[in-house]
Length: 311
Image (cartoon, rainbow, N blue to C red; front, side, top):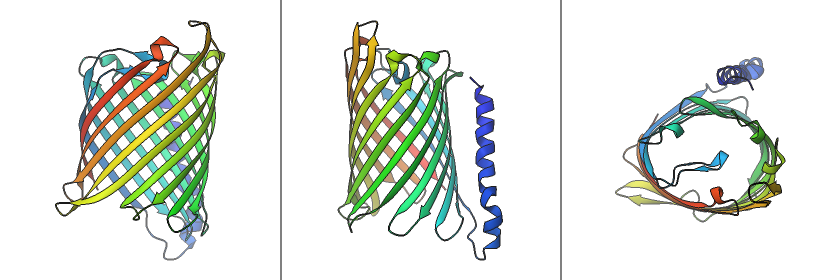
């Protein structure tokens, strides 16, 4: 597997060159808007009742708290009247008080090309993710997803996408895998963006190097977002539920049968803007993972708070 620094450099090169593909055409167009830039930094703390690394089915059964720092920068460039290009870089760092071996640092590079065809919108997004544990290489993932979306009535909006991903895990080549997924989302806007529902479904087929890690899954989600005025500012409340039915296609040697997982996750997220640039966030979540593989059968509670500043 290539080193993380090589992959990051390659991804940066791809993203840096992407705008040049359209540069000549953009320069020829008069009145084309200049690119817009954005950034956000967040600092917070989180309590985790069961410190775990889900990607490798590792759980501690112990609680800990972590300091979290997130940084996001982005650029948006309108290429013509109907086409828009967005580039982004996200950095996240979680540092635990006791479980330093799972201190996690994640780099995400993204590019999103969108085309507005009127009643129908199309686009393609590409992401490169590099995650490290305690300073060492852990996970690398490439993700490409073409999508189509549009309003089907005044209040209903639909989106469909195909997702391909290729992941590799350091020192765990048997878990390296490619994934094909199809997903669909339906939005119902009660009062525009002030209050709406999101119902989603995803079918995923993951093919790993070791047959015991191959699986198919059905994923469902339900979200409700509500914005309300509190002391003259617009606060946001988000309630969400996610369910995954994961069926492995081969026998897991340690249990002598095919593995079967059912995962339920609930989360509540509260955000309150202090001013036009600063926001305080409170969140809490509960996960109940049921599995016939004992190490993957557990529950987890997470609570956290963050202070966000954007410009």
